Length: 68
Image (cartoon, rainbow, N blue to C red; front, side):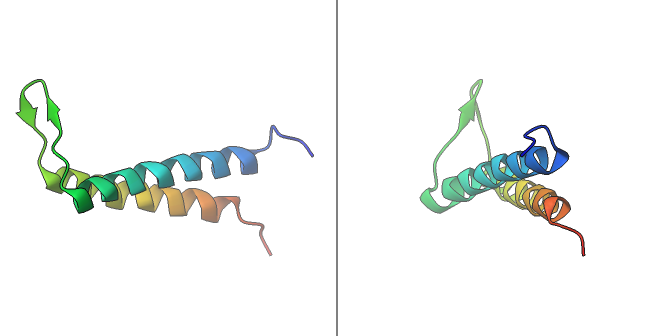
C-alpha cells in the first residue's frame, strides 16, 4: 500500500477538521471562556467554526471515498 496517495492525505485532513469541529462543539457545551489578548471570544464564533470545520471534514471524507 502506497502511503503517499491523495486518499490518505484527504482522510488525515478530514480527521483533523473533525477533531477541531468537535473541540468547538465541546466549548459551546461546557460554556468555556476564551480570552485572547484581553478580548473575550464570543460563543457564536465557535458555533460558526463548528459548522465550517464540520463541513470541511465531511467534504474531505467524501472526496476520499472510492468512486463507483
